[in-house]
Length: 200
Image (tube, rainbow, N blue to C red; front, side, top):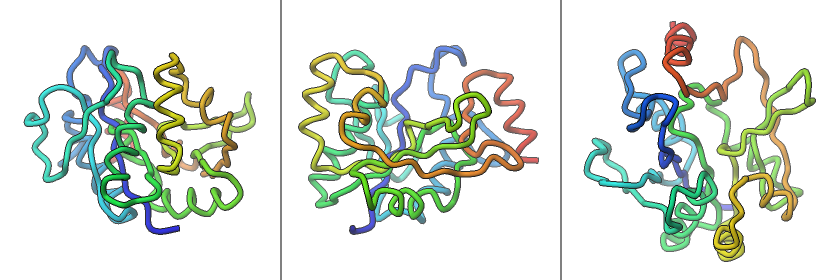
């Protein structure tokens, strides 16, 4: 497998933070999006941001691609946008990361690639005392070859990531949660305060 391209999913509506772009919120010396870029860029061949609306609001030296499915169809629409962009660039896989998750592992991509040796898709996961493993569906390795299948699924109304991935065989790359879950994401002002504590 060639080195995957990276896609930062920033297309959500951020309702619990009062709307707007969560990725622009400052955490320490950088924005949330800046933290994500710094973690993902060294792990991928090239990087793109999936976001809707006016792309000029992003002060980053990266291409911005919008969903091709109307109506804020969720993370899968961002995955599809990333797949379409990657196909044009000659990549056979993408790795996605959420724009509001500033502490995800610096070995995310190689661990996902290793997990995907037996399945076409790999998702990140962490231990969960109730469910055994908790999947993090915005952190995954996706083969670009499945983009037309995903397009049809979205047009048919599929919105839950695992509803689609479970149809294709999905491996899990398990990460530890010490000293905290690296896939902790910022949804509320209280979460932002916790992130500042983690950063400190």
